[in-house]
Length: 306
Ligand code: DIR
Ligand code: MN
Ligand code: MN
Ligand code: MN
Image (cartoon, rainbow, N blue to C red; front, side, top):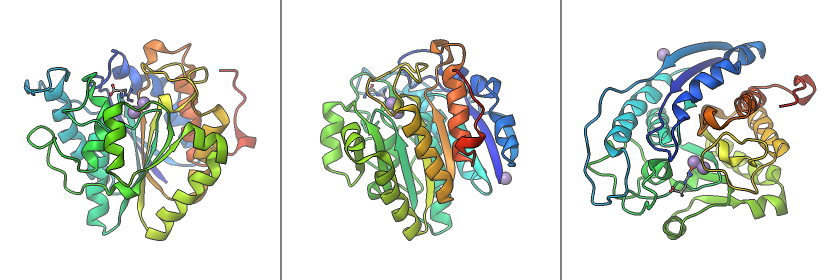
């Protein structure tokens, strides 16, 4: 398979600086060579960059960097649309605000192909704030509301070519939801598997149900992996750690099952903040998780102490 690496040094959506180093850390950790070693054709397309953005005033004074994030969203929607023509684009973030653009772009691609787009959201958070409801003002908290077509983005973020149907979005790992997001969830058909559900049923059964739906619908599948999906002791390099996350094995099992399904058409690796890492261990973990998604078997995994 052709894998296209696309670096997105975006940090304007996060509370802490450092995500702009994410693409570099993933390269240094050996992402390209690892994927090549699995027999794939890797093309590193370099980093995307936006020029100086406009100041965009908004009634919600808490919002930070609205102009720049809007500009990134517009550019990334174009890049994601273009690069989803063939092979699997791997979007190396960068904070999670980038998914507003990447999902908008791959959704436009799916619509053109006459297929539904499904999104697997692996995260501690639902990222379902509107521009009005965010209290932190960090725009990595809004991408799901945007790409599912919820109101309030008009005149700020670019119009969506094809909003994603909430019924096609499955969230796994959720354990930190703000009250406004909780209220917004009620009005959607998004599937939310919180950590308690995972504890009780196991991640495999939950994921299998979703993958069967994707397969039956003949959909494209975009996977968005936020570092804070994982338990902070395994993946410390993220600005918004939340205890009680997915274990090392739960995360790998998700990736292994995604590989076996053959359904994944695009991937975000987001929120890696190398400044918070411990000798690159979180970057290496993301490389290994991506390897599992692209076919590496447990028996072939190099032994690392992390
Ligand atoms: C919180 C945290 N819900 C916010 N969101 C994060 O700032 O809106 N998303 N960390 O990944
Ligand atoms: Mn092309
Ligand atoms: Mn997130
Ligand atoms: Mn998160």
